Length: 257
Image (cartoon, rainbow, N blue to C red; front, top):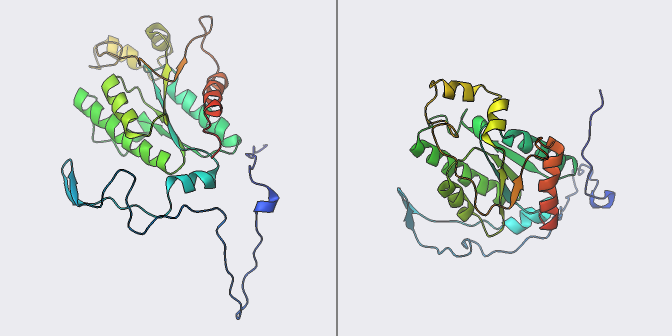
């Protein structure tokens, strides 16, 4: 079996060999990257130092650490962002997410996939598929994705996320241009023909209520960054779809710090 190893973007000169210090020697370690100096106790830009309330949380204060987003991005040699993949069940969201993560990994970039089904195994296992719970599901994922982007990671969120209002709310959490909405624009008949989990069949039989595309609406994006569609009536390959997204990332400077 052959193991694929992602190429390194760091030269040999940037790797320092170190030996264990002897009993009478001390080793001084210099930081590998420059750090943006921040005054101790200073706040995130736009935030003040006051104790405040947010939602139901009271008596809280935002504390900013000295290592900031720009430092993490310089370390990773990429720009943190959220790639939000939305579309009907069976449109290929998870397929694209995994293919994109794999291609970026092989090119030396750090990614993480937030898959809707996977998140309902843990973080969102207390939520149903009713409208109010779906809204809370998206809100939680948006907040987690924001943290990944702030860490300098290319976060790939893959969820049906049927309602435009909730997707736009997630967009508003991030700085301008770092939320990249990818619309899997595949017609219902293609998605239903795929039906990888057999859910359309159950919904048509009335065994699943509130199923997106059958008896619950899907609100297509109005101003998304990327649209992926069938080519001559056929679905593009996972790699072709991934390359379309990677091309956008390259053109907009996300693949370097």
